Image (cartoon, rainbow, N blue to C red):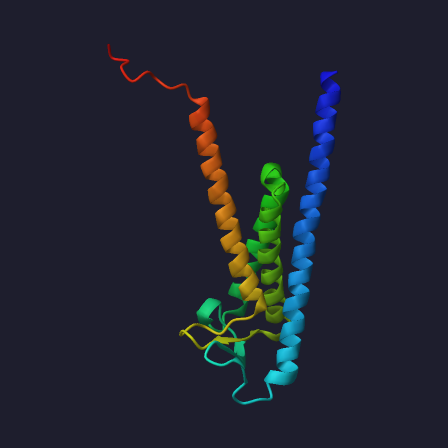
Length: 189
């Protein structure tokens, strides 16, 4: 009888693992598609315009930019360094998802990882194919680097992942405290 319970748990775990795999895989693919379509549209319609276009006055514009650097244009013209670092980071996240079975069950962690992986792959495609990343979203309400859809997903995915991991740690700490027997207040008597 105990063997049957174990099999049921393993079966449920397997289903959850497949669902988690599908979530991050599908999210990654959708992010890459959205990123590449947005960049194609920008190259076709925004690049020919010298000043870009105002999308929402005072909030943001679309302006074509070829970014040969990393975030905020740092380390310009070091294409292979950025490519190597991005590839290692993406591989690391995928390995983490495969190895950490418990975390893989969280839909939020899977979706966040998919956003980060998809965004990283979207920018890697640009680096491999063109030697630069197409950026185009320019904020007008504050001075900030011009970015793209992939960057947005990496940022949002990272924020969601941080919240999930911090929340998980808080829950684990509460469980540890609840499992620890309390000492009486006047134990020195």
